[in-house]
Image (tube, rainbow, N blue to C red; front, side, top):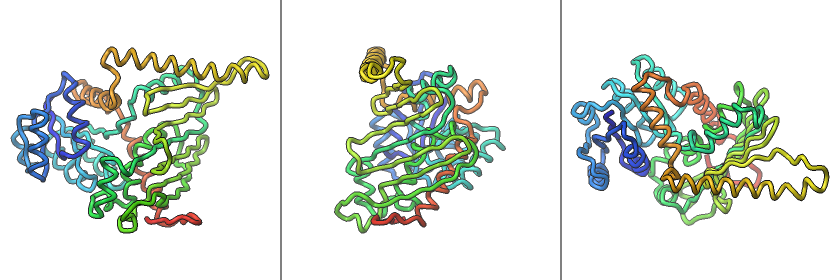
Length: 362
């Protein structure tokens, strides 16, 4: 299967690394409006062809799949042009700027009998897949409440660039950097929530950094989602240390803690021992689970299966297979639309909710 990629920035390197691990796909070309970006990426990864003109790449290479890793402001236009050229689409998150554009892309893909997926890096992380198995087996029961947490480093490679450059494309998003990462928080919970939840969201600028008054970048988010039977709490924080990335699933039988940094999952089912014995045994039970998870990861490492972007690799493999074998796309379109709808609602509220004592900047 011939793959082409447009947008040669930070996310492109992750895509290329995972594409090259698959025997079923070949990356034939990359494209970027900045000549230097396209050329350097092609040289570093040994890619035969690079372009600055998207239409020229589509015409000459005739790829089966196009990966769109450009800023989200350009996704709608590029997606339509790629579908018109007969291509299937893998688009980086967020899929589009809002629900309307998201629905437009999905509709256009379906009308032209193409397939689409979104770069939800952690949607198929090994621990996320394990949670689905535990739910299917009845181990954790039905969902009652979820907590989706993402810590962020504004001094990191991407954050530092955004903070220092007021003209960066992230500042043009309605919800700025929070808007850019909301998919990571929401795509982990939408499959477990019900209906159209009531949303209450607040964001503010919590980190003091040189030049922050000029960039006006909200870096703290708290959002509560209340459905008919399931609730969820979403947190984005640039201040908390250590920087963590996790999901807590509270079910009718057990609670599961998914740590995406260490790729581990532990369960809290309570102790069967009475009274103080149960309290004494609980830490040992939890410790044993961490030993077990560490051993499992060590075994995966020995088998060269312990990767930072294992979820993205699984997604690519499943998506390409859905094309060759005419299967449903790996991420249901309904979930993608629900993420977009929740993002719209949260971003809208960021412009109106004021937290006492905090500086809201949206």
